[in-house]
Length: 79
Image 1 (cartoon, rainbow, N blue to C red):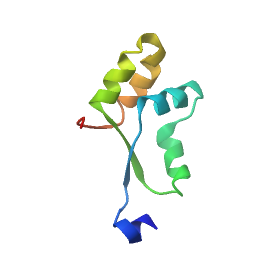
Image 2 (tube, helix red, strand yellow):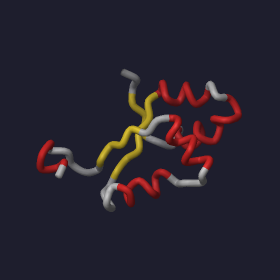
Image 3 (cartoon, helix red, strand yellow):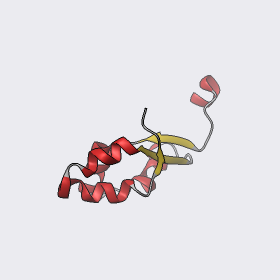
């Protein structure tokens, strides 16, 4: 639908936020592995912004796991 209507092509670039990644880590969900399954086996790239990474780092020990995971994702500029 989206490829025909809006011209969006694979690999899809999916922006994930700190809360999403934190909950995924807490529930032991591998976002890179599960995201394509959610999107109907499409190729996709999880992305984060530097601002999101700073936000998770500001959580201290609670956000350490999410920050570690988010550093492996493709990073884009804030704004």
